[in-house]
Image (cartoon, rainbow, N blue to C red):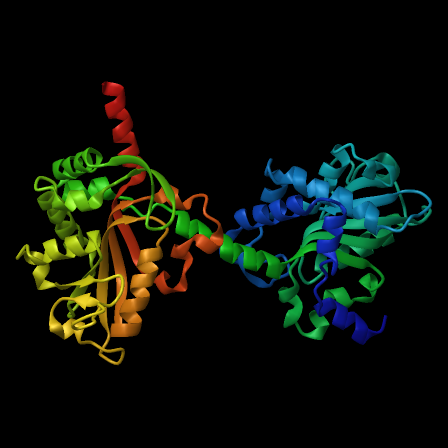
Length: 468
């Protein structure tokens, strides 16, 4: 391999180019996806400095993957299935060499798995430095390997580790194993190849181009772009699934002197539910309907809900020199916006109010907003103003996404906050990513909160049943 070819390989993606076909042939597509999920789930967001000295936005935290009781057996399964298919047949055994710490973990796990890999491999753990006490050895494993010398008969080795970045650890390992033990590393298998870490390195820092590793067949099960893509999806999905109720709601209610009112409104919500099942606006099947339009028309509940929203909005919204526009979507949110607009209270000092139709009227003004003409006559080129979306329930976020789009595109009104009476968090837990509407970039910068979560409603319903 020429120097130019070595540098080109060093900068290339070292994931098996046919990994999808390999895992399909081995009937482990599901395991492959589950391991990727675990890798994404166990990252620690940074930035961090990698062993190679490169700054990375997150840490793959592979030691966690190898100690995750759900992920570790699947990682072992992938290594066990891939390696015999990939490695050439030789006379004798390969020596699997796992460097401290993460690589040593996977080598130890492979040694303890009791699989058919044992028919072609033995295993050692490679310390970064020699022990300073006891045996003072650098390898841990069967004595026939730890006692090897440079004069021992040559044998072939496989380097296994969590991540390949610049290749520095591999280079050091190849030199060590050859010079001290006459073990020639012919293959290296990683969980993840951090290809992008090498993309902008100068040629003289491309350790994978070093003559010591040019003859090593280097492969990985995943590349960093897969992890990046999956992490981005995973984090967005997790964000969409989160409970958007104010995390400090009970403390907030105490500070605002509203604790009793808060409990009464929760009781009223439960009083007004209708048992189902029903299909929500989002298309989700739900066991009961919160019937929020009834809450906003209940003469006992409506004044309390209006007061709660008023106090929370005044407490929560950033103060600025511009009025917020409270936007209530048809039907329940529009009712709430109308109630807030008719209260003649302190909220009027910082807010105006509009009702947002699902579709423009087909007669008369043909407008989609109802409210003061200064707002209904706005255009896409009007000066930008900020708005608050108010509604009864947040489920998948579809209504919010559509409302944000309509208000921005048609009126240059930017929704910065959304406040709901109840967050139906559980509606989002089992949705596939494509149906997680709170992932939509249109609502990425919207601060979304709710006064109650559906679990609170469920718990009160259950306690009332138990009391009967």
